[in-house]
Image 1: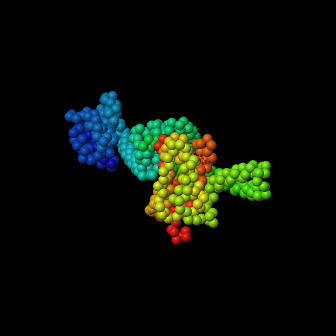
Image 2: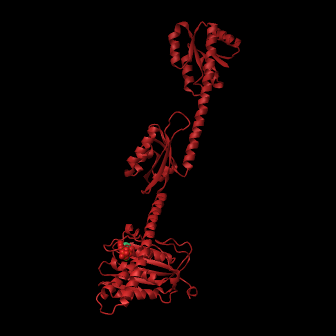
Length: 509
Ligand SMILES: Nc1ncnc2c1ncn2[C@@H]1O[C@H](COP(=O)(O)OP(=O)(O)OP(=O)(O)O)[C@@H](O)[C@H]1O
Ligand SMILES: [Mg+2]
């Protein structure tokens, strides 16, 4: 323990030096302010006994200068004052001295004060060291948290006891494209979808007041302006200490998961509807079969011109029409191809026959053109079903013209698809040779919303539509291993392109 005595009076200086040395302290002495400052600069003492009144730099000035410097600011200073100078000594306390003793010194009193201030100084140094260590630890853990949060592939936020946000990680800022200053506090709510904001804030606030974890979904605006669904999970912080210090939370973008879920639900709904329709169609098919055979039997036993014969013939016609619908229903439910009915089908020939049927019934002003490839490899399939596909597409095209003049163009040909070909609207072509059927019209076209639903069973925009045509097309094309691509612009027209796998001639022979 080193004590520096600063005293211009030689007698007092020697007396103090002797007194403290006798107690085992290491003592350094200076006879004036300048020497004192130099001595402190060379080696820091643990305590300074400082005379107030000295020629040159006086005690107050020494005290002031020591307090100015970080290294010397905390050295305890005890002023030495003449007994009549107590008011002055008190002034010294304001300058930062820890105590003062009056001359002439009482040995015991002086030693007691020196001991106390040395001990206090020691404790203070120890405490400062501990605070410094804790601060460094805290700083390090804060840095570790920030590094971890910024490296995490999710969005992370933290808020204080007042519900205001105090931190957003790099993931969050990159997602919203905003600066940390814009997001801090309640700034982040600017990116929340206006329709979700109240619910979002209420969930957060309620959980916060009850100090419990929460989870919520809301739409958050991404940097490109698109609102994305996020799942936000927050927990009170820190769980281990008694003091509540706010919340920490993380968010992930769940837009795709949500969309997939909705798509799966819609597909499941459609599938069960399809199954039901197929079941009903099956039973009706059987009933219609009986109606046919009964009508046939009755007709065969009825001489011509028998009253009621015409009615029976009409019943037979209606039953035939009903059978068509039953087939459409079965096809739209994707009931598959009957393997017994598989045959090599020449698509160009089939289209040609269909077009011939249509030519007679086309509304005025509608032009129908075709470009049918000669010598196409056959499709291995069901001719009646493929005919159904062609007929539905041309009927729709003609209906899309809505009685206005326009053109329908039908093309057939062969194409090849390589590995990794993208999925079409219906089906995904694998690598191989295909026969394509293209039906283009200059009709009303479709909005993207309508386009997204045209293959659904019972979806129609027509007053007398059944909404089964394209569902049947879809079912038939898929059961033949094919795919469908649709391009459409409202007011311009629509193109359906269908790919059927080409069968090698050997396989179909
Ligand atoms: N070429 C096209 N141009 C414009 N819209 C079309 C075209 N083809 C189909 N659509 C739209 O798709 C819907 C569904 O067609 P789909 O053939 O399945 O049923 P529909 O024609 O309404 O009734 P139907 O079962 O009697 O054929 C149509 O109502 C129509 O809105
Ligand atoms: Mg149709």
